Picture (tube, one colour):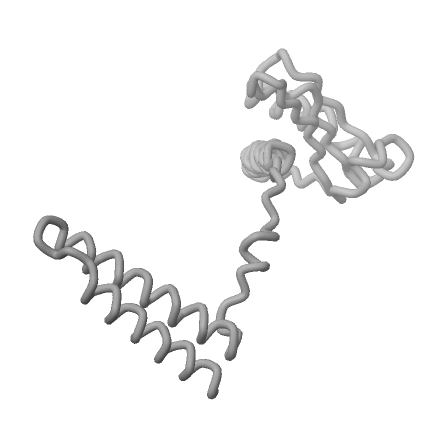
Amino acid sequence: MKEVLLSVCVTAILTAVYKTLAPTDKFGAQIKLLTACFFTVSVIGAVDGAVALFDLSDIMNADTSYNDYSVQFTKMTADETANELRRAISEKLAAEGITPENIYIDVNISDKGSISISEIKLVFGKGDYAVYSERAVVLAQRLVGTGIKITAETDSRSKFTAKEREEQ
């Protein structure tokens, strides 16, 4: 604490001497500002050295790496698109009394941002497959159009990719 007080006193004395000797006729306001800045910076430096309130090394060593969120954005967009389409298909099928166990949707997003759906898989239990599969494919085809491949399957574990198993 003695060092802080000594630094502040020395700075105050130097500031007073400078104000006394400096010509104030022409540049009085600028000299006052300059001495006030000098005094403030000196006091902050003295207090910072003794108390260590500020650590400028943290500011100088800040992480300035670039975070690319486009991959996360693309995945979130694909997931949201698949969820909305899955919801619409589920509602359409439920209105007809058909409830598949799972609906898998393959969403593709190009580098230019266009979204396309290449395939939809409706997964039924063994008993429901024979009764509902053909009708479910026709209803889903009416909802999404003829450009998308729609299939109905029974065994979800053996025919899907690892990506589709993760979603399940």
